Length: 275
Image (cartoon, rainbow, N blue to C red; front, side, top):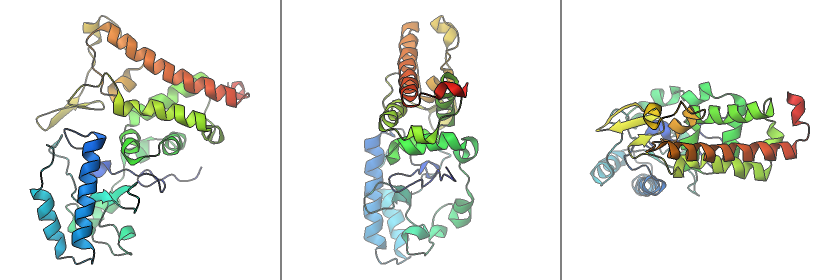
């Protein structure tokens, strides 16, 4: 499989989470897309001739434009995050040399060139090659890709449960099956449309008044033991009113995982030899 880039894996998608992409109280696809399109248009207006004195004008206008409240105060939302390709499929740094004919303007940003260049995404460290391949292969848009690839617990637990049922690692050539891709994408889409997600949650973190804490699941209050899908439920920002809600959520996750397992077994008749 070779080396897989988490930040810019291909021409169809990328991730900008480290630049504050989702750090808004309203981090819906519509809101974040509007911010990126607006800033990209504005940047192109001011910096079409690459006159560095215009960058301050750009920054001032961005600052004065209305935007949603931030989710977490200590995370900086970089104003130079925008779309870096003509088709506006990939997000990234508008000051990066790859989009400025080799000229690097990142020292005009808050963090500067050295810090940006040296940043190491935790997902790059903690996701193994097979997990990275799964996510980068099945997800095709920047918004969902960034939400998922930075949620280490979600990716690892999903992969682990599938691998447990199959008795071994997933084969890359099998993962390229179009139907299997759709099945995995449907599961990861829960990150965006999960019916039990609580407002003020971003994955396993709960945010309030610019501060955050690790969220907890009150299993005792629900009259049940810890779910076998605990990590996934936290990653999806879950909150349940009743034990019945929890049971419904577990059944949804169970169906998603078994859809993948059954399709994989149908494609690879030798899957049992992994055991």
